[in-house]
Structures are given as structure tokens and as C-alpha cells.
Image (cartoon, rainbow, N blue to C red; front, top):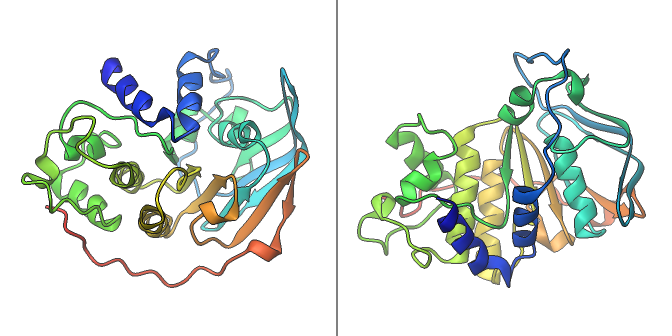
Length: 276
């Protein structure tokens, strides 16, 4: 319930600035609604584009005629800049907000031409603050796709190498605020994205607040989760991203290429962890 969610948000608030963002999303003004002419898109390939996008908030411009093109299956990281500017990029791609000028599109279609069900049904989001539900570890993964069977939930957990061998009931362990450490909670959020099996994955500060061993585990999990998907990772610095094809830096409201921090994606093979 809501009380449980806020208990976890409070636990993570000191280490993760995104807890404040979670609170802001809960209390924000109503998000954009479907336009009368909006239509569903039968299949989303994952071609994402911002064209001359400007976003302004009460403190001034966040994006100023910014351009971004992510091709289907490509992995791109957006690093640097203020946290609120990176958050604006995420909000635009989910149509939690519309740009003040310019266009945001999926597969060549302006987002205002598509139904919200199409947009959000095509995207999985990984936030650094978990949003838990009452129940077991399996319940907290299955929330991403409630109709998923146990084998699918187990496969998602194994993809991200969620090791539960220290829990007597494994996936069936009831969760309290201290059952899982921060790293494993982060892996649960990535397992949710794997279970959703969407063409697009968005991640916001996925490695923030973790120890080095946790960062390695989450980086590897994201690498596996992004396989075959269009992926955009937003992070404060290049050390906070998984392997990607391109790195862009936020600079005074624009997205600029940063070849010095680009990294080639290694071939990734995940062996099953200790999920039960």
C-alpha cells in the first residue's frame, strides 16, 4: 500500500536524490492526457527522437532547442547537467510532460499523436528508488506484468543475477523494509524491466548510492536487460552508466557528443545466479 511505499522511500532518501523525484511525481500536476486525435501504434520499433526541444521550468530553461536521436536497438547515455534537466528528458520520453517547443517522437510519430497506453506500454523504466508492494520477492517482480507465470518471474530474476540463496524461501520470501539490501532492490527493479519485455528501456541514475560491488552487479544486470532493446540511461557522470554505444553530455541545455567517454559494448553472457 501507500504506507509501505513511503516507508521505503524514506529509507532511501538520504542516499538517493531520486527519492525526492519520486515524491515530486506523486504530487505533481496532472500529466498530459490523450489528444482527441491520438491513436495506438501496433508495433513500436524503438526509434526515439527529440527535435529542437525546449523545456522551461520556474527556474529557467532546462533544454534549449536540444536534439537527440536514438535508433532502434541502440544504447545511449546522457550524462552531466543538473538532475532536473536529466529528469526532464525522461519525462519527455514518457510524455509525463510536453515540450514548450519542438517535437518528441517514437518511430516518426509525434507523441501527441499516440495514445498514452502506446507510449508507456512500450517503455520500461528503472529508477534508483524501489517502489515496493506488499508480498514476496516474486510479487515485487511480477508487479511489472501481473499475468506473468512463475517461470517467467524466475527467468527475469536469473537474467539480472538476483542471488537469493541466503533467503530460505528464495523468491517466495515475504519482504520487509530490511529483507533486501540496496543492490538487490536495484536488481529487482531491473528484473521488472526484463519481465515487461518492452522495446524501450529508460534508466535514471541506476548506479547512484551503491558500493563498488553493487555498482558492478547493477551495471552487468542493466547490460543484460538492454539486450535487443533501445536504451537510454541518464546519469550524473559516465561512471554511473552501463556499457553503451554513445555518450552524450548535457551542456547548457543542449545534448553534445562526448566521444571521449564512449565505450564499446562487450559481448555479454549471463550465467544463472542463485535464484530459487
